[in-house]
Length: 338
Length: 263
Image (cartoon, each protein chain N blue to C red):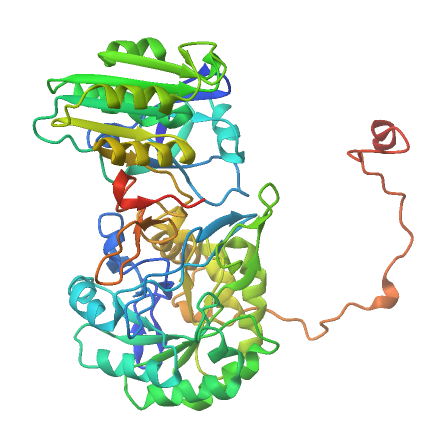
C-alpha cells in the first residue's frame, strides 16, 4: 500500500490533491458527480465578511489552452456561508479548507474569527491575491509588509493551519513568501491567476466586463512551476502548487519541483472528476515506480550542477530554413521542402 | 462516453447529432442542456453547451442542433456515427407548463428553434393549442419544418427576405397575433432566439399582458454552477443583495420579465 499522505503544518491530508478555491463552489455542486473521500481536501470558494453579488457579465472567456475569469468573489458573506454552506460541508468525508478574503487587513482577521468556532473547518486559505476585485484583492500580496501584517492578524485569531495564497503578478514571489512565513503562515499556495486580457475585434470591446481578468488553465502551468521553484528556494514552510494541472503528470511536475501538495482548479470545470483522476494517476505512477511513499516524489527533481550550457560549443552553422505555408513565399514552398 | 448514432445536415451550415445516451435521455426535460467535450482538439478547453433538441427515452437517444460557426462546432460537424462523445448532463432547469394551459405560443428565432421540438413533444401530452412562430433569415435556414408541422397545431413562418412564409420581422407577425385576441388566461409564451428578438418580445409581453418563459444562452466554463461565470442580470434585484442568476444552474429558462439582456 502506497502512503500518499502529506503534512501541511498540523494538517494531515490523505493524499496531496486538493481542489482550488473558486473552482469547486462549496462542494454541493459536485455532490452527485464525485466521491469527496478520494480527495486530499476541498478549498471553498472565497468567503468575505459581507455578501457580494459578484461582477457583471461577461465574466469568463476561453483563451488558447486557458481561460480568463473575472467573477468578483460573489458569496453569501460569512454569516450566510455558516448558515447555508457549512451544513453540507460538514458531511463531506475529506478536509475542508475555507478560503477567506477581506477589504482590509482587519477584515481578514474578522472573517477568520467568525469562523473559528464553527464545526467542520480544518484550515484556512487567505485569498489576498484575487486580481478581480476593486478593493483589497491584489494589493495585499504585492506588498510584502502588507502580506505579513494580514498573516499576523489572522494568526492571532486561530491555531488552525493558515495557508497564504500568493499571486504571480509580482516582481519577486520569494519576497512575498518570506513575508508571510515571517507572519506565521503554515504554508503558501501558488499561483493564483495571472492578470490577462482579451479583445473582441468585431465589437472592439474587451471580452471581460472588468477589462482584465485572471488567466488560468494549461497555459499558465510553466509559469506556475517556475514560481513554485522560486518559492522552494525562498521559504521553508510547505508549498502547495497550483496552475494548469489537468492530469497526474502535471501534478507530479509540481511535486517533483518541491510542492508538498497541489490544487486542481480549472480542470474541475471541464471534468468534475479531474481531481479524483489526478489522485488515481499519482497512485499508479508510484506503483509503477515501486515507491512506498509520495514523499519519495516530493522535491525529487534532478538538477544538474552545471545549469547553463557551454555557449562555446554551440554550432552556429545552420541549413537554410524554408517555411512552406508562407502566404507570399518568394519561391515554390513545395519544391523547397523537397 | 456516448456513441454518435447520426450526424445530419438539416439546413444551411446547420447540423443535428443524435447520441446514444440513455442515462440522459431517460432523465431529461424540455429546456435542459448538455455540455459536450469537443474531441481530438486539445487547444479547446471548455465543453460546449447545447440544448437538448429532442429526446427519445425508448431509444435512449438525444439530439443536439447547432450551426458550425465556432472552432468547437466545426469539429463536431465532421464527426461520424460510431465516434464517441464525452457528454455531461442533463443540466439546467426546464420549461414549465402552468396548470390550465390552453395555448403555448412558441417563438423561435434562427437557431433558437433548437430547444422547441422537445417542448412541443412534451406539450403533446397536454391538451391545448401549440402555436409556433418561427423566423429565419431565409428558407435555407429553417430546420425540420416537416417535423415541426406535425408537432405544432398551428405554424407561422417568417423570413427576412420573404423566401418562405411572411416577409419581415417575426416579432411584427407575433404582435398582430398577440393583439388580436384579448384572452390571456391559459396562454403562455415560450421564447428562444437572438437577443434583439428576445428584448422585443419582452416589450410585447409586457404591453399585451402575456406571461413568458425564455431560454437564454451564455458563455460558461463548467455548466453546473462551479465556475459562477454565466451570470444573468436580475431585473428586480433581491432584498438580500443578489443581483445575478446563473444561466447554467438557475436557468437556462427564466421568466422573461425578470431578466435584463446585456448588450
